[in-house]
Image (cartoon, rainbow, N blue to C red; front, side, top):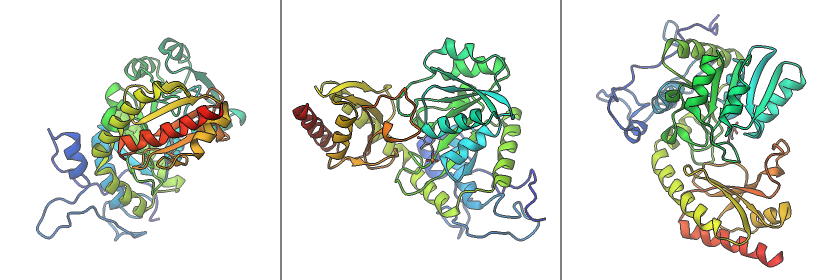
Length: 377
Ligand SMILES: *Cc1c(COP(=O)(O)O)cnc(C)c1O
């Protein structure tokens, strides 16, 4: 049987020596072949379903050199071992597979709506007990841990931008034998490395900042290099191989190509987000600005309720009215138009994903749309 899972399905090469190199350098250097005369400089895009026998990988549901290239780069940035998956939700599903049947999971009372819907379905099916907590209230989260199996965190959360105290919560969870998962999509490993804070599993929607160009869906999970982390890694690898909804090599290759510029894109987007958050706070049609002080997402609440927010989203020229985030182009969306969005998210909340355009163009466009809202009110 060529596709039987084994513990040795990786084709990972010895990573290049990147000791002492900064993240920006590792982003560029990793996921390439070892230097040798004639070796390709670019990462390999390998399209094959099977491999000659007796090599490190038998069959491409278990591994692929393009996956390994992406995993090497992302793993190094997060400080652990990465597994690429078909989407962020595939990564979420993989991480939730660590929850025993009938187990108890502690989750934010508002986070990515796909996660909220998935745990809600588990709860409705009697497959899990779900405890919902305000992740900004560390004491309340800790109080929910006894008897739980898994603590699911997202920080900052989508779209309320609530920030959890990761080191404190990871330590409290470990003390009580509770596994911790952190969705690090909004921060990226350049702004936050949950494994260093003691978290067990990092989840990514690589669709967003890591790829950065709104042209692929992809996900990843990352675990620590210690014994506990390696055991989780093996469980997650088995889930991927047997679940079978794997990432395409083309998508993975595009994501790695996008990842090469993450530091540059993020630097610009974060600077513009901080600038815009300040300017938005002074606009008369904006009733609240949510911005955690880092990252490139800003959420605002506007006058005129849901209709007011829809009006703003419909009348920008530079900002694109579309769901998703983390791409080079600035996007905005009223989140409650999504059917699974938690009720804690205000109807008039617009999530702004700040891209890499000229910040003054972004401001002129958005403030003009907000001015028009003021006129109608
Ligand atoms: C988009 C998103 C996901 C889901 O990722 P997909 O790639 O769309 O499946 C998960 N978590 C967060 C925080 C997200 O923003």
